[in-house]
Image (cartoon, rainbow, N blue to C red; front, side, top):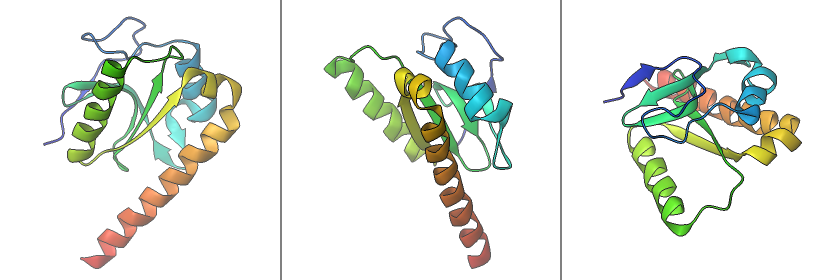
Length: 132
């Protein structure tokens, strides 16, 4: 069961998660995701999915975009992120994860990667609908 909850545009940590708004998330929202619309797909900002808070969510494509801090994660953090990704995947969501420096340095390339993934997921969705 997919559980979604809205937290608005808060700048503080949400329920102990790492979903914090900063320069990278602001640029991702404004420049890359066009304030919530990319290629005709609506994205929501800071949503709760199950027990996880995600930076950006497209409900129709089941696509999650997360932004990680540039600090080098320790092995325990990496394991938590792998487990988190697996849990979201088991709920039917696709996850894309970018580091802050990628958003700040290469916003056009990040946008293109997200657009490509969105197009692929939209085609998969149309194919599934036609199969019924």
